[in-house]
Amino acid sequence: MLIEQGWVTSCRQCVSPHFNHRPNKEVSLLVIHNISLPAGCFGLPYIDQLFQGCLDTNADDSFNELAGLTVSAHFLIRRDGELVQYVSCDDRAWHAGVSNYQGRAGCNDFAIGIELEGTDTQAYEDVQYHVLSQLTKALFDYYPELDATKVVGHCDIAPGRKTDPGESFDWPRYLAMLE
Image 1 (cartoon, rainbow, N blue to C red):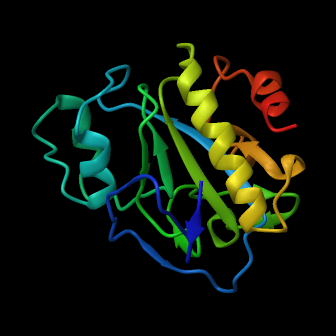
Image 2 (cartoon, rainbow, N blue to C red; image 1 turned 135 degrees about the horizontal axis):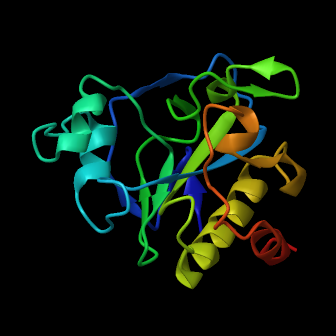
């Protein structure tokens, strides 16, 4: 994968308005998340809509709690392996919320957020691990402060508040693919 000015050139770009500039150029953390809208439903347009700020909250009763929410991630890896980018990695996406990594608050300032289309309890697809590992390696090459010791789950930086990527995420498998 080729990255130019923070954008992966070989993926679908679906630009989000929910970002701002990083307070400095530092990218030193990779955060793995999961998302499905509605919960447990895959392949629908609602994740793109949420990150673009145009989610029809009347489309599903569960969307009422998302009204007015301004969130984004840098990337989404869909169940079929499609890679979507919403925010340049050089900018700050709004994915981590209230968060702390090794005593540093505000992980959005220095982290890249990757969403996997999935749930905490349903196994992820082989192709998602493949795309995730390829993306991770490209990010390691592009951002010298990143390495396998600086990859965490959302649950690790927001314990008690977040549980993703969940028990279904195979950390040993993913990390072995990075070697």
